Amino acid sequence: MKALSEIHGAIIVSGDEISERLNILGWSKIIDAIAETFIEEAQGKVVSPAKTIINFADANNDFRVMPSYMQKYPDVCGVKIIGACPDNPKKHGLPLAVGMYILNDKWTQRPLLIFDAAITTAWRTAAASAVSVRELSNPNASTLGIIGCGVQAHYHIAAIQAVRNITKVMVFDLDKAKMDNEIERGGSCVTKASKQDILEQADIVVTLTPTTAAHIFAKDVPQREMMLCAVGGDSEKKIEFDSSILTVTDHFCDSLEQVSHTGTVHTALRDGVIVTEDLKSLGSLMISEKQLDGTKPIKLFMSTGVALEDLAIARLLYSGTS
Ligand SMILES: NC(=O)c1ccc[n+]([C@@H]2O[C@H](COP(=O)([O-])OP(=O)(O)OC[C@H]3O[C@@H](n4cnc5c(N)ncnc54)[C@H](O)[C@@H]3O)[C@@H](O)[C@H]2O)c1
Image 1 (cartoon, rainbow, N blue to C red):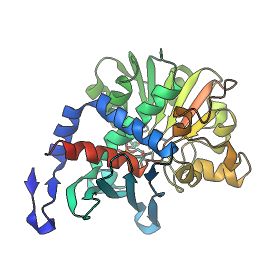
Image 2 (tube, rainbow, N blue to C red; image 1 turned 90 degrees about the vertical axis):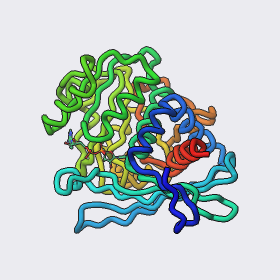
Image 3 (cartoon, helix red, strand yellow; image 1 turned 30 degrees about the vertical axis):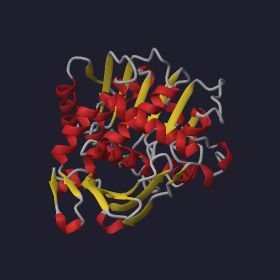
Image 4 (tube, rainbow, N blue to C red; image 1 turned 60 degrees about the vertical axis):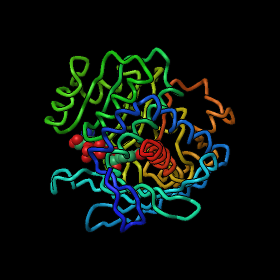
C-alpha cells in the first residue's frame, strides 16, 4: 500500500487493492461487522448523524457527506464523501457511486487510511442487505430475485448466498445487456425473469433500481411468505416502492431518520399512510426491543445506507494494514 507523506502519513489505497483485501476478509466477517453496527446503533453507542445530502438537479446527481463513530472502537472515526450519479455509467463511463473514505485517528484526527469508496460501498450495502435477510427471511429461503442488474447486483447475490442456501437467482433489468451480463457472471443458477415472476416466485426479492417514480405497488406483491429488500430508493428524490407497500408489509429500516427522507416513506408520512411510530429499525429487532408482526407474511427491509457501515469496513481494512 502506498503512503503519501503529504497527508500526514496516511495510507492511500487504490480500488484494486481494496477489492483484493475485501475478498481476503470474506463475506462472513464483513456481514458480522455490519450486523454489529445495527446493534450498537440500536443501543445508542454510536455517533452517526443522518447523511448530509446536496441535490444537484441540473447535474441529476447528489453529493453526500457521512461521518460516524462507534464507542466500541474508540480510537478511530471516519467520513465517507460520495456522490450518487445515475447518469455516470452511460454518459461518463464511471460508476453510479463515486467517492472516497477517510479513516482518522480519533485522538489526533490524523488521517490513517484513505481509499476509493465505490467498491466498499457495494460490499457494505450488500452486507447490510444480507444482515436483513438473516433477520427477516425464512431460513430455508432458496430463490433470490434481483430487480436492477447494475453494480450492486453481483455483490448482493454473493452476500445473500453467504447467509442463505440460494439455489436459484431470477434477474430482471430494463436493459437486456445488464441481465445477460449478470447471467454470464453468475453461472447456471442465474436465470432471466420478468419483474412480476420475481415478485410471485422468489423467497427474497432485492430491488436495486435508481428510479425516481414508484414502479412496484402493493397490488403487484402477492400475500405470501417472502422478504423484500429495497435498496435503490435511498434518498428523497428516489423511489422504487409506492407508499402503499407499507400497509401490506412488516417493515424495518436501517436508520429511522434517514428512511423518513426517502421517497417511499416521505410520501407515506405526508399522505398519512403511516405515522412515524410505525417505523421500526432492524437494530431494534436485533436487540429484541421491537418484534416481528406475525400477522404480515411479507417482510420489508428499507436500506438507506448508514455511515457506520462504511466505518466498519474502513476499520477492518485498516486492521489489515498493520
Ligand atoms: N441503500 C444503500 O445503501 C445504497 C448504496 C449504494 C447504492 N444504492 C442505490 O442502489 C441503486 C443501484 O445502484 P447501482 O450502483 O447498482 O446502480 P447502477 O446504475 O449500476 O444499476 C442500476 C440498474 O437498474 C436498472 N434499472 C433502472 N430502472 C429500472 C427498472 N424500473 N426496472 C428494472 N431495472 C431498472 C438499470 O438499467 C441499471 O442496470 C441506486 O439507486 C443507488 O443509489 C443504495
